[in-house]
Length: 94
Image 1: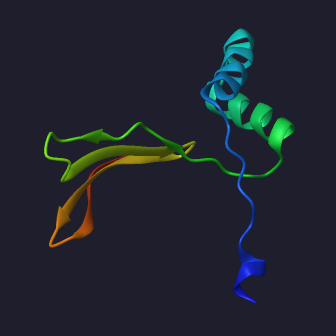
Image 2: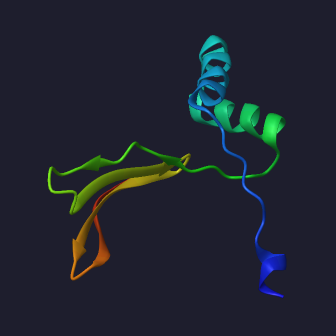
Image 3: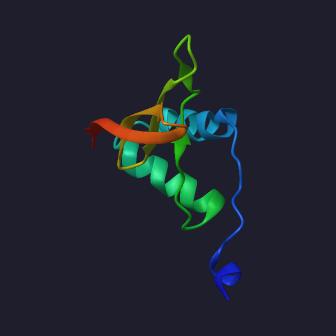
């Protein structure tokens, strides 16, 4: 059944992620690997995705969003055309 393949998601606040970053910064050295280690200790082998707040145009037909994770991210803008939203990736970073 397709529903069996859908796993529940956990919503994390930025305060939770910031607390892990603070622990990492106090230890110094390799920031990315220390963050992964601390994150994995707290949440297991689960990945996370961060979404920015959406920025809408005045006419509400265009929106800009950034999506990122531990490996990089992308900038996405969405435009409503003929009653449907179309998504465009404008920038990718690693």
